[in-house]
Amino acid sequence: MHHTASSHSGPDHGTPRTVAAHRQAFHDLLAAFARPENTEQLPLLAALGRGLAMDILAPLDLPPFANSQMDGYAVRSADIPDAGAELRITDPIPAGAAPAALETGLAAPIMTGAMIPPGADAVVPIELAEPDVFPVPGKAATVRLPPVLAGTFVRDAGSDVRAGELALAAGTCLGPGQLGLLAALGITVVTVYRKARVLLVTTGDEVVEPGSPLAAGKIYDANGTLLEAAMRQAGLDVLRTGISTDSPDELLLLLRRHSPAVDLIVTTGGVSKGAYEVVRQATAAQEVEFLHVAMQPGGPQGLGRFDGTPFIGFPGNPVSCLISFEMFLRPVLGTLLGSPAPRPAVKARLASPLTSPEGKHQVRRGTLLPDGTVRLEGGAGSHLIHALANSNALVHVPVGTSALVAGEEVEVWTL
Image (cartoon, rainbow, N blue to C red; front, top):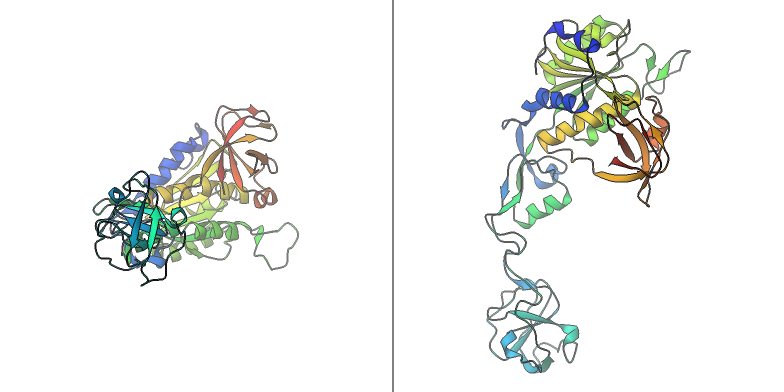
């Protein structure tokens, strides 16, 4: 996505961009992240949390053979009439053994997961047998069994997935369940998208590093920690510099120094229309567009390229910054790279009323409660980081909705 330098001021004076349009602009800007050469092969456990770069077809049936769902007796169902039958007990079949064919009139003790012997077509659970305990191996014995339908308690070969079928689709986020499936299929190495490397720069003369003295008029930097943590959790490789001052020349030098080594630049602060907006000043000659998105919080945004490297300028307020990440960068990375997995979206009922600017998509912080209601945490302000820290969900109020009463349904993203 390329912008001309002349596009700096235009969008600020026009109609705000919709959330959907801005998310598409992110997608267009970062689309090259999903190119085929941006992949690597990793052993399964090293691929945890990564996005699968290509479809995986099952190389074998799963399970690879018909096996027993229960501890019991493998039988030929035709051997047992409606009144039941007394059958002679043959050699037991432990899990992992390759059994001989089951002859007519015999019942084979079989363990859960063990291979069904050729000829057998059903399993009678041990608790339905008389006696309901297995005999001592090698000792001649009989067992009385009730009638059973063919297929009962038998897991057929390929009943989970058949050889040649799609096991996992490209774009799947690899969690424990997905890696377990690959292991069950005998796969040891998987092709995933590389981690994107991100330069994260927080700006502002008023911001100081946590741990240093706090002079009058200064605040501790929350954005660096907040965004780096969110980015790492989303599978990004983060290069974080120290806080940049409000000197455009210093910021320009910092960006120039690091941009060749990263896939993406993300800054916080300095994107509004004030007189001292350092990010706007430092990127004045670049293909970066500054605009307003119809969203609260997080309206002011910057997007484009710095010396050809994709560039994102998030607002400086901590909550605006994180909401911007959650609304745009995180879902677009998930769509393009399969990682991170999407935030689960659920419907919940408001525990209290709310108001929202009609022309904006409002994102409130909330706590999703066990009874299916969501309690709002704090107000609509973009500085309420304590309310953010005590939330487990984002509450969405779409454009065109100015007020909702308690009990009304809203879409909620669980965090």
